[in-house]
Amino acid sequence: MSSEELYRLKTLFLVSWLGNEVSALDFYGDIFCPEEIERRGYVSDHLANPIIAYTVEDEGHRYLHNEIVFRDMKAFEEVQGNDFAVCSLCSYSGKTRSAKNAYKLQGICIDLDGVGLKELESLRMYFEQDMLPVPTYLVNSGYGLHVYYIFYEPIPLYPHLIPYLQKLKEGLTRIVWNKETSNYKIENRQYQGIFQGFRIVGTCSKLGRTKKSKQNYRVKAYKCGKKVDLMYLNEYVYDQYKVPEGFDSYGSGIWGEDHLTLDKAQILYPEWYEKRIIQKKPVGQYVCNRGLYYWWLNEIQTDGNARDGNRYNCIAVLFIMAIKCNIEKEAVLQDALSLVEPFNELTVREDNAFTVDDVMQASKYYKKSYARYSINAIEVKTGIRINRRPKKERKNQEEHLEEARAIRDIRMRRQGKKWTDGNGRPKGSGSKEQTVREWQQQNPNGRKIDCYRDIKLSRMTIDKWWKQEK
Image (cartoon, rainbow, N blue to C red; front, side, top):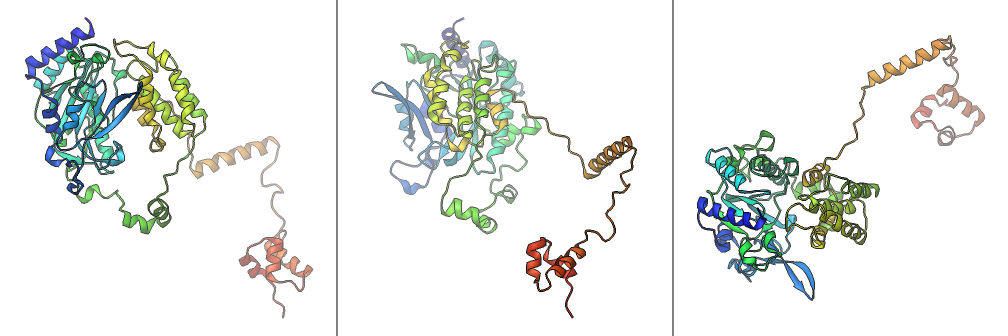
């Protein structure tokens, strides 16, 4: 069965199960309440806005353009039918679509790949039997599904809350993407962060990028269930991914215990405050050995590591490694472009070719903010296991000295000696008192400071043994 035919059958299945598709304006109007979005030209509203990104072609060059969505939501209408347009579930307080500017999180979306009719039927069974949390929307994205869990109340993205939300999304991905709901292998499961953007409803799916009749392969949304809260999602994920009880009390003191205010930071860390807040100097970074970059470049070319499904993320991490190792962007871009052809040969799904556009999209990870990207985050992003160096077994002082003494005794016994034989210092020889006395005899008119400079003993020791003249 071709991908196009499967897409049409999935559409029929979703319509028979959930009813008619939801328009883009209704879909995003439900996610981002228009009353909570700033109006165009009304900065005094002091509200946040969604930001969409879409491709623009100018004089034969394609680039990604960011556009702020205002209360009239016209931006979602203008990109309908676009080849590539994405929107995250965050509203932003600035003009750029960055994690630093993310203001509130409207929900969590799981990108579920490898979904056919059999997998759709399994999903419906899981939802009906309460084995998985029922999503607010299901979106037919082409080859797979986007599973949207929209919150009743948006969650403020305070820095100390973000790690909990990231962990919750990872836990949701693990249960939603399973052997019954995807025909991909579990090890090919992809984990994405809460700031990830997804194809906008009404724009082209991957199937529609190369088709003349793009309207036939649009991203389509269907209403599935109600809006959710965090405690509802908590009931389904494994314990290590749950958000703590009372997490929805965002402003309570228990969530601020680990969060240091600027006022306290100014008192505790005045040098840091002066450099980072007053002088606004950028965050410093530890520059890794360049061998780390070349190791990763070799790793993603090793058989079995890069595959259809994680190729983009492999290239994204290549740019991250370049930032960690302080390698010029032109050099890493050249390396990444050289991988387009071999990576494209790994294509399994139709119309999912790996292209130069994918490399250019991945180049956005060449930012200083990714210099501290962790090993665990890289493993989650790419699905490639990174072996750590084994930690040395640490001994306490007693164990260490016990072994050292045993080695000493064995060596002395082989020589027919004891370590105590003749190894002591003669009584009175080499004492600090004698050293000070001898210096005074040689320098009868010398001062304490001269003695200190010559024999390099501490001032207290010299004071103790200094013989005063009568």
